[in-house]
Length: 389
Image (cartoon, rainbow, N blue to C red; front, side):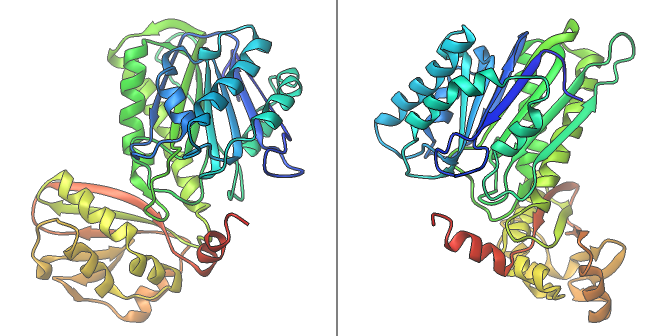
């Protein structure tokens, strides 16, 4: 179910790809608030720079796949303006109300001529049924669309919805955002509170996933609120907590779908660390394991090479005593006091599951955190070794 107050569409603009949807548009026919979080990469794409300064006014989202419009020189800002203006003129709104997002190859100028030419048919196709096409139009190396929804179960009154869509498969190690993510709700919420909730929820979900340790130049996450179903503005308290929980459900589902669809991935692994001196050190330890190429290739080979995990922990920056470390694979006691505790065959069998949890206890304090990762396979190298061709 799509929240009320929104329409979407997608077309084949042929900006880079041929014979596939590559240009999508979402419009809020009713608008109450908007918020966003963006990549912390110093090299930021032109659409990120454009949208960061306009997010509070955003009533439409224009997305292209195939060309990132990043590191494309002084003309990049002009191409953003032309793109937004082409849509805005047909929607009878200001160009500053059109948010932009791009995904694809860095360094290639945006094919703005093809985009502008496709705009009339794109706007004409806007409908309540256009969201499936939109979810496919934003894909690059993704193999499947990624969507999620949740009802906001307020204790009384109308029950609004939250719907989200994301793209991402490689170049995944978000920092304050996801690769590209777009969330819609027909609840009404105070703008400053919406920004705070989105940032906190992204931190707990999208900022806890990694495919390859690379933070993109284009990472952007937007949320638009129409207020159609629930016009009473949420300003805090119990209703804010309920909304935040529902949003977390949507973003957590999208983040897990991204990891399952990691380029060439065959296993999804949750790396959960506890017993660290602090939450910060727990996160350092979890990231070191989740991003380690040697650990990730062991996940792919279903190789119970526990020494790689201990080595990753040891260089993470977390303070611990190696001979106090315990590690479990789901319910299997694998490492106890820094030494192997079970048969290699039992650990190998546990690692053959498509999804499992690696639980690490540093036994050195109350801190805990987690990361969601995937294995590193032959196909990842094949995909990224010829991505531009």
